[in-house]
Image (tube, rainbow, N blue to C red; front, side):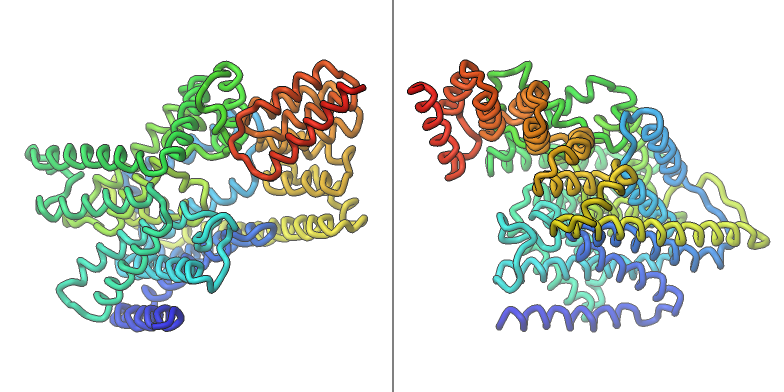
Length: 606
C-alpha cells in the first residue's frame, strides 16, 4: 500500500473511532474535551515556527484556555482544594519569589506568558468532568498519531524535516522532543487500549494501530530517553496488573510488602536499562555527563535557592567556561559545545530554584502519583503517562519544549488528590469575578501579541536590509531587550549587515541573556571593527574557553593580532591553530588552517 493510503486509512479509522467513542457524551462534555483536544493537536504544528508565529502559539494557548475556563466558571458551584492543588500553589509562589528576588536578569516575557498559560491549563483540567478528561486523553493519542504521520512522511521523503541534519523531526526541531512526545502518547494509548480490551470495538483496534504506528516512529527517532520512558512506564503498568493493586498507593491500615518489592525491581531494571543504553552512542552520553558535571558547579554557587527560575541558559556557558579554565586538561574539553539545556530536569530545577524548589516540585509529583479518587479508583492513563514523562525528564529537556511542557499540568490536573478543603457556593459572585479577570487577560493577550507581531515584522524588514526597518528596529530594541529570541535575531541581523557600532549593545545583551562562543565571537568582531581591541581580545579568549574544540575563536584572535601588529602573539596563536585538536574536522577548518599557515609563512618571510 502506498504511504498516502496508509496515512488515510489510519486517519479514517481514527475519525470513526473518535465518533464512536464520543457517543453518549452530552454536548457540554463534548465541547470542553474536544476544543481542548483540538488545541492540543494544533500546538506542535506551530511550535517549530520562528518569529511572531512562535508567540502566536503562546497567546493562542492562553486565549483558548481562558475561554474554556470562562465556559466552566459560569457553572461554578463549589470550590474544592486538594493537597496537589495546595502544593502547586506553593510551588508557583516560590517560582515568583525566585524570579523577582533571586534572578540577576529580568525573566524572558514569553517564558512568563508560557507559565501563565500552563497554570490556566492546570486549573481548566482540574475543573473538567471525568468524561471530558477521557475525551481529552483520546485527543492526546490523536495528536501523537498526527506527529507520527508527519514523522513517517519525513522518512518517506514526502515533506522535509525541520532540521537539515536529521531525517526525522516531526514538528519539532530535532528527534529528541518528538521521541518524548510520542512516548507519552504511546503510554496513554496503551492504557486506553487496556480499558477498551473487553469491548473489542473499533476504538480498541484504532488504539492498537495507533500504538504500533507511534511505537515505530518513536523507535526511528533514535531517542534513548524516549525508549527508556516507554519501557519503564510499560513495566509499571504490567507490574501493577500483576500485583492487582496500586504500586504507589499504600493502604493506611496495613503494610504492603509487594509494593516495596515491585519498586525495588523497577529501580534495578531502570538502572540496568540506563547502563545498556549508555553503550549506544557513547559520545552523546559523555557529553551529557559533562553537562551534568558543569551543572553541579552552578548548584554549588547557591544550593538552597538556586540562581533564579529560568536562569539556566544565561548561566550554563559561563559555568562551562570557568570549569574548562580550571581543568584545562579535561578530556571533555574538546567535545564541549554550545549548550542551553541541562538534559535532566531535576538538575535543571536544582540550578534554577535550588534544593527548596526541587523538594516542592517532588512533593507535587508524589502527591499526584500517590492519589486516588474518593471511591479508591485511580486515573491509570494519566498516572502512567506522568511516570513516562518523569523518566524522560531524567535524560532530556521537556520543560524547554512547550508541547511537552503542557503535559505536566495536563496529567497533574487529571490526577485526583486528597481533599483539604471544599466549599459550596450558594451564589455566583466568584464565577463572575473570575470571568471579568479572564476577559482582562484575553485583552492583555491580544495587545501583547500585537506588540510582538509588529516587532517581528520589523525584524523581517531588517533582514531584507530596509533602512526604515533598521531604524525602527533600533528604536524598538529597548522595549524587547529581555526577549531572548528577539535579542539574538536583532543582534545577528545588525551584525550581518555590518552595522557594527549599532550591534554592540544588542550583542552585549545577547551575551548576557544567552551566552555562547558564537555570540562572543560576533561581539568580539564587532568590538574589533570599532577599534576596541583590548575588549575584543578578552571576549575572544572567553569564547575560546567556552568551546576549546572550535577553531573560530583562536582564528579570530590570530586575525586580531595580525591587524594590531602583535607578531609574537600572532605566531603563538598560529602554532596553536595548526596543532589544535578540533571537535569536528571539515572543509572549513582545513581552509582556515591553510590560511593561517600561509599568513604565518608571509610573516616569517618579512
